[in-house]
Length: 238
Image (tube, rainbow, N blue to C red; front, side, top):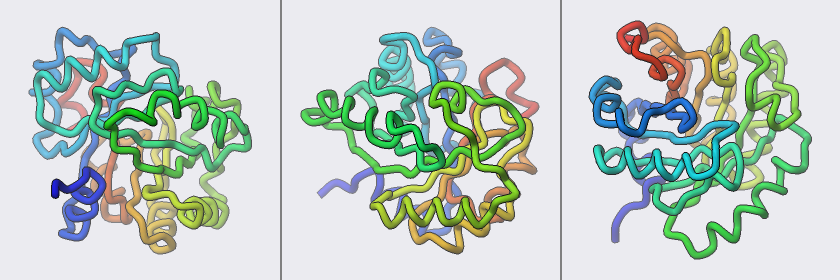
C-alpha cells in the first residue's frame, strides 16, 4: 500500500530530516515562469505550499497545474478561503485558526469546503494554525479579522498548540504572517515542540539561512519560506 504524504512526512521527521516548504502565492506568481522559478528555489526543498489570504478565483488551480507540470515535489494547498481548493493538488492543510475567535475560521470555512472535498482524492491533513505577532498587520489578520498572539505570551501559545493537538490536529503551524518583520521566536518554537508530539511547521518572516537554521535548531520540523522567493532576489535568502 502506498504511503500517504503525511506518513512520509512522519517517516522523514523520525529520520531527523529537516523539511523545507516553499510557499507560493498564486496572486504573486507567474505560471509561465514556473520552470525558471523551480530551478531557483533551494535544492533541499521538500514541499511546495500553494495559497494566499486573498487569491482570485481559479488562480490557485492554474498555479497547481503549472507547478505539477514541472516538478515531482508534493504540492500542498494552504488555502485562505474554501473557494481556493482544487482537487488537482496532492494534499490539503485543513486549517483551523486556533489563535482567533472568529467562528468563520474555526468551523465556517471548514463546512463550506466539504462539497469540494467529499468526493476528491486530496489527502486532507488536519492542521492547527496559530497566528503569531510578526510586527506587522498581516494579510491573515486582516482577512480573518483576528489578532495574532503576542510573542511574549509563550504559555498561551503552548496551550493553544496543545489544545489543537487534543482536538485531533495532525500538524501545528506557527505563523508570523506573510511579510513579517521578524519570525517566530526560537523560545516559542522550542516550548511548543517540547509540549506536543505531532509535527511542527514554522513560517513567516524567515528570510535568511541563519533564521532558517535557528528555527530548525529550536525544534521546527518544517520551515516555510515564501516572501524570499516572490521576486528575483533569490540569492539574498541563501
